[in-house]
Length: 176
Image (cartoon, rainbow, N blue to C red; front, side, top):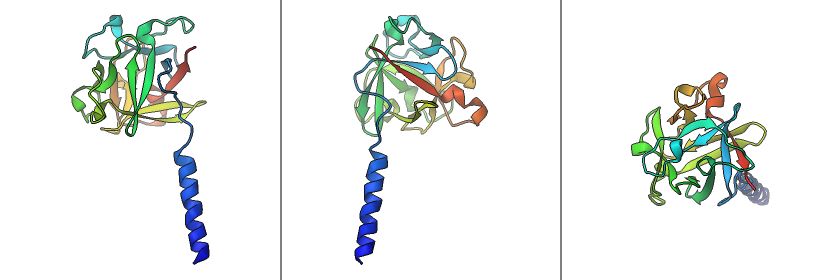
């Protein structure tokens, strides 16, 4: 009986150790978010500040002095993070709460903790990049048509094969 209790404690301790791993981002710290194998970053096109603007990939401004519409910050939310544009102070949102592939990712007013289409789970490793997954649809932030090119619109899309996964993989550059 004692060995079973000890085994149970070990399992609980191991679970807590792995569940409480270090987060890949810090709250309220500015970041640029880059497509894994390019110099393209998340961009609010035309530096627009209105709700409903679809986010795109664009050539990165100078990382030492980035354009404000290329800068993002994270706030902890139940199950993940909300990701805010420094420029507009609006957050990434899957338009209409879509569950579909190619659901547009837009900027929108923070709708509170119950708005799970604005909450993103971040997983991965520094050396391999990170996935950003909607906790509502369980689909990944992706370049439209899984083609991370200049001007590509951002959407959500289910996981694809490893050959095209870079269109769903992101690098976070912490700014000073």
